[in-house]
Image 1 (cartoon, rainbow, N blue to C red):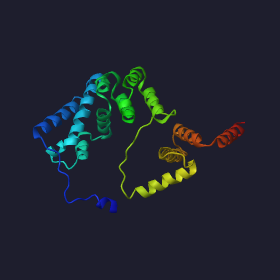
Image 2: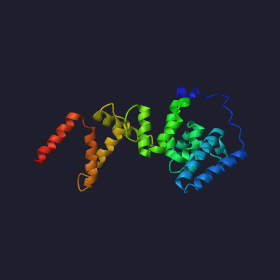
Image 3: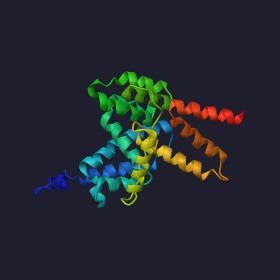
Length: 245
């Protein structure tokens, strides 16, 4: 708490100058685009670039005050009740992609635009826009995501997604303990995502042992097998062969 209280000041910064007329226009454009979202794919991608620009302006100039909301997060919660993640994705595209890339986003789609934004954020002025736009046009979405991830990390990887959960403070100890225990079993080099997968696979296997879904049980056991070191994999397969014979 000491670090937090040190940020309190007797003279807090003044909020940005509020232009009510512009705020009404921007919020209206956001609602117009969200209501219009059912149109064809390419046109929607073009509109989403525009939506990201307006969302950035709402955050910067605090237009959410027009609706008597307490924060920009409350504003997103009202416009994006299912998930605010998409809004932040669109804002990231606007903030990090150069103008020439944003103009051509309708040719590649906004999901590929997000991948391009990751590279642009890393490379800054050295971002090779033309090369990566060409790859985005030529490659399927999943392949392009893997290509970008390989470029960012220097190694091959499978497609990934960030998932957010709302957790209460009372839930945190048991969840952290479960992930910590899974890490001890899998090895400290495993990510928390792998640990969570192990926990879920264990639950699915247990839930389907007796009169459950054999396909789900097989899927869970397959995921377990993936985590075994090389020697243990061979021992496991050898035991299966002995029982089969």
